Length: 81
Image (cartoon, rainbow, N blue to C red):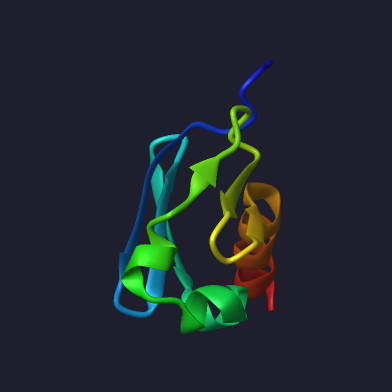
């Protein structure tokens, strides 16, 4: 399987989800991308699986999925507006 994105870091910094994608760091305000992650505790937030292709992130405990394309599109749209 070909990797779409190389995700080398995922962490939570107060109200932000910080992801390193293809060696570039991105910060997303948690409450704007996922209600489930916003309400989750540290243990739940840190229980994630990155898809083998790097296309998305899954939190099995929360039954939550985020696509990297969706997150990057969100950032693009914010900069254009």
